[in-house]
Amino acid sequence: MSVSSSKVRIVAVIFSGVLVLAVAGAVVVRWAVVPWAIGAALKAGGATDVTFAVERATPWRLQLAGLGFTWDAVKFGAAAASLERRHWWTPTLGKLRVQEARIDVDLDRVAAGAGAAKVGTGTTAPAPDQIPLEEISIDGRITLHGGEGLTETLAVDFAARPVEEGAWQGEAKITAPGLELALEASYRLAARELEFRSTALRVDLQPWQKWVEHWSPLPGGPWELGGTLTGEASGEYRAEKLTASGEFHLRDARVHQAGLNLTAEGVEADIDVADLTQLLARKASLRAKSVTTGQFVLGDFATEFSRTESGRFNVASMSARALGGTLSVEPFVYRLGDPGVEAVIRAEDVRAEEIMALTEDLPARASGPLSGRLPLRYDPAGFRFGTGWLGLKPGASVEVQFQSSGLLTAGTSPKNPSYAVLKKVEDGMLKLNVTELRLDIRPPDAPATRTARLHLVGAPVDPEVKAPVTLDLNVNGPLESLLNLGLKSNVSLGTKP
Image (tube, rainbow, N blue to C red):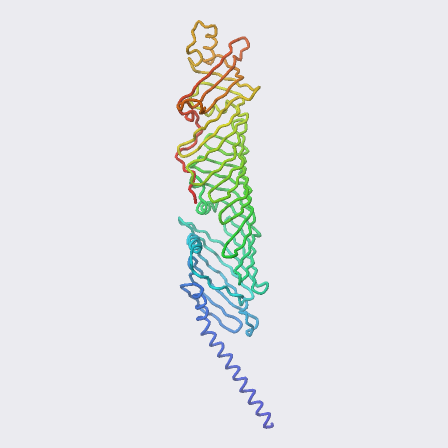
């Protein structure tokens, strides 16, 4: 062996030894530096109570166990987290995988923090231009906490990857009892811009009714909700502002509210939400096969409304079958927090006998179609009529049977030829065929104590009896007390959020 060959071999051995020592040193340094680097990075991001254990650290794989930290209203934990890359010399950290993540979120604190951030004066740290990862995947569970002991656990699968320089794209699937939600999103790091849309959305309302009441209180207190909500939503986070909209559909629903004595069956709804953050709706339509409130039953109920500002509902139309005819409501506005609601009801061909069935101790019976216009106010004190009317359409007639002695004969001499017939009518022995009837409620030209004025023209149904009857009757005292609708009083209609 030549001297030069020996020197080459010696140099090669020395180089190999140095390389081995360098790699060994790098591994040792990595074991020593990784815990410090990870802890420093989490704390720099605002995390506290950081804990983890390094199970493995090589140039190709880093594996942690028992990872945990707290960040504001969020507590994070994971059974395992790993970074894996194909080549140790590349600048990327490779693929990040988090397994069996456990995330606890206090939603009330998150909402309060978001509100404080809107009025805060602090500066925001600049966003990184890129994330040195090839892929991120997380599986685990998110536990949501709300007021009054509300808790719900969601199963979550999340995956994301870079699609171009400084831009990432991801998918998430969230499931829980009565909930299925899938999302797609894209995020630009430097601009901090997020765009998202749902690819699946299904919610069974009954398991989530307490959350609905917590985040969007409904009038009257606790409600019982059932049915299925489906739809789609999309939005973006841009310039530190979240905007989102969506279309939602409710089917096979049932609603019950004990405070309002209200039950609705066969409920369906279609809602076009313009702003999900404020729950503002461009247009909403609501239908129900039946709505029962007290003793009042509505069939084929339908309404259209919008919510153009927080707490304000603009009702464009409302109609239903009731009392043997049709009831509709003129457009009106309702604001959450108002002590009562006012509306004008139009009645078309409602049956007099069904109206009379709602009255108490009324000395008359009637059958036939009536129509009218009735302003109504409902508040914790009960309901009250405004100035309106109820009566016969031209050409229509109703049959009336009185049961009130002296109603027609008072002031009439027994010697009057019509006295005997009038006596039979007021005692209920003869029915009247009424061709003119109008009940004016709270007439504006009447004394303040007068609540109604009845004008009636008719004749006995018996063709053998020729005795026309004209009756003008004034009603004093609360007209509303004659009706027994079974509605509860002292009921709050809601508070403004």
